[in-house]
Every structure is written in structure tokens, then in C-alpha cells.
Length: 209
Image (cartoon, rainbow, N blue to C red; front, side):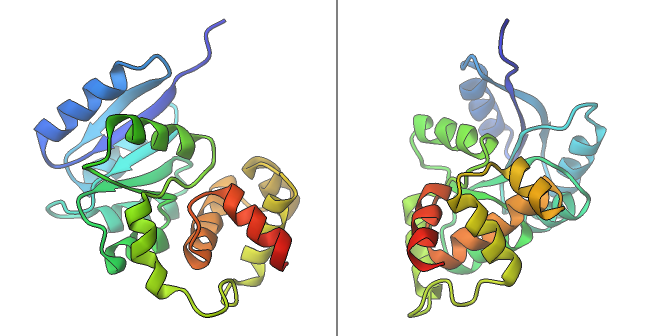
């Protein structure tokens, strides 16, 4: 029996960019583009119109009207279960922080290698937080001398369960919260710790919690 493919919504205001990324995704055997949108509001509408929720939303940041940060916030606040991965040209600290605070779980750059982009999509669908190393470096100045000191109690609870090897769905069940909420907490944890994935976060937790 063939495994279901990872469902992706592609959001970018440049048709040429969408065409190129769609071709890249459609050439794989495990990913598929199920909708496209040219601006943030259209992205929110496209996700809500799908009969089956997508797994990943690839979100551009700089778009006319509703930008990617606000669209991400609307998707998360509206209960969308898709993992939002920002795909943009910018790696400045402010924009990265805004996107992650809005609920994005990952942040990739448009000049990434094709294999890196595909790996990032798969990683996000699996519950991880793909973060381009250049983006991680942009976040470093926000780290305090004691990383993790500003984690909330809930973020610490989520992090402790990650360290125990629990998946997002198991963490959600254990804490009585939505799985998408777990993803949001993890995105915040990764940013505060300056790590790019749950493995690194788990290692940090085992040493510090």
C-alpha cells in the first residue's frame, strides 16, 4: 500500500517562483502541492477551503496586502494544523523573530539548495523545526548569557517531554492541549535556546532541566 504523500500549500506572490517550487515538489514521490496562493489572505482562504488539512504551508514573507507574518498568525490562531515554514529571501533578526513568534515552525531561505528545501518540508511534516544555519546565526544575538532562562512554564513542560522522546501528538495528549499548540511552543523553545531541531533541544533539556 502506497504511503500518503505530504500535502503542501505554496504561498508566494511571484508566479515564476511558485512554478519552480511546484515542479521541484511534484518531482518527488512523497510530496505534493495541493494549493497555491499569491498573498497572505488567499493562503488563509486556500487552507480553510481544503477538505483535508495540508501538512505544511510554505510561506513567503514579503507579499502585498496581508504579509506572511500576519497570514501565519491567522492560520495558527484559526486552528490550522499545518506546520508553517517560512521560505523567503530575508534572514534578518527582526523578521525571523516575528515569523517564529507568529507561529512558524521553520525558516528557510530561497537560495537554499533544492535538496535542502525538500528536506526542510519533510522535517516540518515530521514535527521538527527546519532552520537554515544562516537564520540560526541571525537569532544568536537574542540569546541571553543563560539560554533557556526565559522559557515559560508550559515551554519547559513541552521541552521536558521532548527530552523523554515523546512525539508532538503524545505531548499534546499528556498536557491536554492541541497538537498545533505544541508546535507553536516548540518553535518558541527552539528560538529561545538557539537550536534548530528537537534533537538539539532534547540534548539541552537533559543537561539543564
